[in-house]
Image (tube, rainbow, N blue to C red; front, side, top):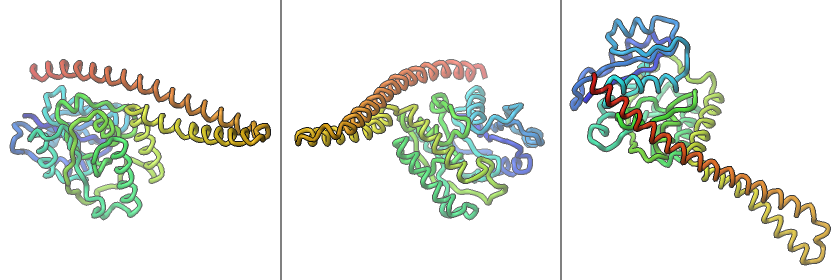
Length: 318
């Protein structure tokens, strides 16, 4: 059983060695532990620090491509190098390395394929009161969108089984954390969370420049992911609103018409017709989206089998 711990890096020369030193060298049930960094276009000596420390693999981007693309490139490299379990952690030593054993244990026990580390958000001193509330709110929205019970959706400290990693797809360019949970929840992957510890802050977060920007991009990511996997539910709910309004106005016009004053309320009839047509068109969009989503599931299934053949053949060669 091989575990590969991957770390996305962008100009992390000052903190990377601290994070690497905190990682486990042995875990019961794991035969081999290897380490991989994703160098996301760093302009400092991040790669030199990693190589001097003894990192096994380096994935290099010549230009910064963002966290989501780095995460997927890391998964691909881990799978090609024979990983049975993949752990993703941060280069700023935000997470306690000893807890890696905790987040892989449900996978080793056959209880889950994806495990998310639940941070003690309310006890984290360097999180402002606003950030804590937004973290809780964002996780609640993701739970509703993914139909899951993950309490800390933005957490980047997580473990994936080989099978789960081969099924993942990230389409946004912002972050993988939210979209992958929605995908896993809606495709019914076995997913759970475990409480983990965090370390003192070594540097400010680079994921967002402002709280407003973080909220906006996170909400767009969640909505987009939900639309990809449950378009019918979204558009049926959206289209029902104008239909109800149109029906209400139509009933109002009929009441007036029966009373003999319908001629003075033709505008209501026109508006009712327009609202019902708009609602029906939105429903049609939902049906079309559902057909596209069904085709997407077929393509994802094909992609999974192609990946499995590809990665398994490379694992046998290694």
